[in-house]
Amino acid sequence: KMYVVGPFMWEKDTTGWRFKWNRNVNTAGGMVMCLPTDTQDLPRRFSIFAAGGPLASLLLAVLAYGIYAMGFKGSPKGDIANEILGSFFLFTAFLSLFFFITTAVHLHVGGFYTDGARISRLLRGGDRAQFDSLLLKFVTQSSSGIRPKLLNTNEIEEGLTIGQRINEPFRVYLHSYLYQAALDKGEVEKAEKHLLDYIGEAENIPDGIRNMVWLEATFFYAYAKKDLAEAEKYLNQYQASPIIPKAQIFATEGAIETLKNNREVAISKIEAAEKEIPNMIDKGVGVALKEKLQILKSEIT
Image 1 (cartoon, rainbow, N blue to C red):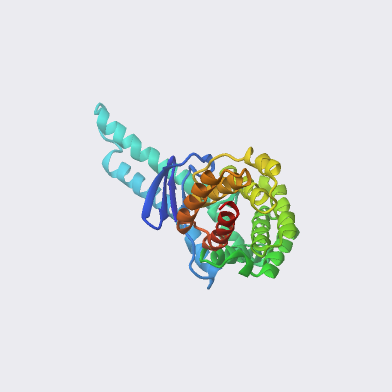
Image 2 (cartoon, rainbow, N blue to C red):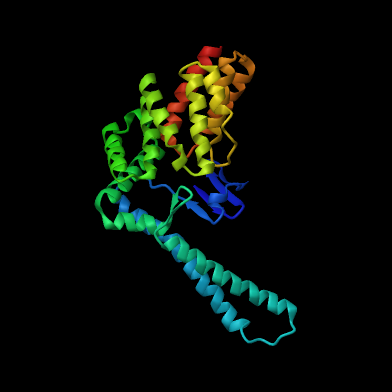
């Protein structure tokens, strides 16, 4: 779904791959996002996927050093081009080895777990493996098109209980699932409670992704509570990020303009959001969002 190398980002949508500039420092070291199509044997499959990053770095380190050793090490001095090329392969070898070590060890930095940490947690079993397995399950179900109100909220609550018991920072994402499920069911007060819990633990979310929290809050207060002042309070905290789906950005802008009774602008934003829904990674949220956009349209027309 996404491939990041330093400042370069490629995203896959319904029309193919699209290039964007990556302005998120947390992902500048490189990132690949893939999503499973079903929940069968998720821990083992995810462990194999997570191992790909460190192993690719190790392979590149060995390959680059091999090229340096065979073609440039001990070569005569004076050939500037040859020295620059040799230095490039040597630098690449050491940099890739550094990335291998830092991604293979067990670390939690900047809101992310290293690949080594994720594999270790899943293989050790216990509460952490159970928590990770449940979170993977919810991500898989939602991304495959199961709308929020059809997710098993008892299992989400179970994951939240485990997350609180082991002081797991990623439990913040479960508040998001509970919020989406309640809003999809039309349970506005319950949705607000879960949203505030989500906001309360937002510091556990990486900076670039954290903007999704403020966008969600803006949409909720504009769409569900019809509270322009509260919606704009959260909108003022939001900063644009290429990671956030355009459909949700346009939908939020449409909800704000609907509340302001700016009919033409609201309709154009809503229609733009509808066109972008097929490109959303989270297909389940997309299903629910499509219905909300239809409601917004009926309110403004």
